[in-house]
Amino acid sequence: MEGKRVLVTGGAGFIGSNLANHLATSNNVVAIDDLYLGTPENLDNAVDFHDASVLDEEIPGTEDVDVLFHLAALSSRNMHEDNPQLGVRVNVEGFVNTVEQVRADCDTVVYASTSSIYGSRTEPSPEDMEIASQTGYEASKLARERYAEYYSNHYGMTMAGLRFFSVYQGYGGAEEHKGEYANTVAQFADELASGRPPELFGDGSQTRDFTHVDDIVRGLEAAADHHLDGIYNLGTGKSYDFNTVVEMLNEELGTNIEPEYIETPFDDYVHDTLADSSKMKEATGWEPQIDFEEGIERVCAPYK
Image (cartoon, rainbow, N blue to C red; front, top):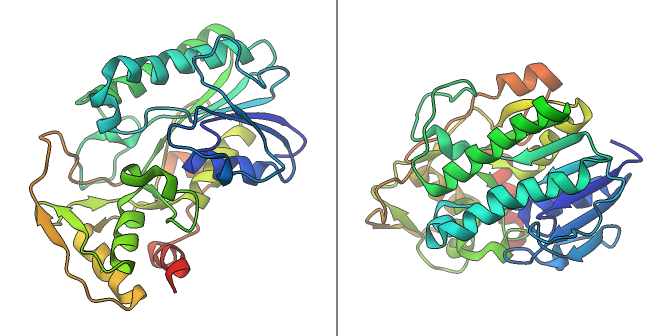
């Protein structure tokens, strides 16, 4: 993507800042963020940042937008369950409000959905499998997908919804500001490097399809470049259990700290995830380039 005017919501957050910084090398990028989990320190000087909300009556930077990347959200189960009304406002109303403010000039939208809606699966999850909302967070993201379908059908906009699988980078990147909401890889690495045992739910056998943020950024850009419409997974197609993750981190950091096992705190906890990203590959040629072993090295490098 080159020479485009781009708006990134949630642009000072973890994924948003990585995307905004990447695109700003060859595009005019505006990032907005209400700084709930983001910080302007994540952004390069080339990005035009505004402290603003997707719920604002007049969102900065919505004029003459070529591509909207809508990443702003209450982005986890717990955030949404703590305040369901706010979750609906940000995740659904905020999405509609932003699209309405750009659609006079913009016909290309790429937005964040979630892989959480697949529930717990050890088999790869394709986009067309039967799904159901188990949490308010999942319901809000499915509502976002339905509104995207409306904008596609009614206005002819291309609306690409990307279901991310367990995105990580580490505290040496833009994740540290997320604190307790950072990916478990980042949290475990920081705890081990600090001499603290990471806490694992249950027996640590749960699995995740860990996807490096650089691959997610490439997928977001590819979705816009190919004017994708519909729902697409972004994941590696490989999963690792948490016990193995701790072992890999210990080996890379040169530590030898056993995890602590605690009771799973809620009944709707997703135990296993695994992506089927063949649809995205067929549409754009996208494939993950960073395997988990390299990702672990990147996460641990700042501690050495």
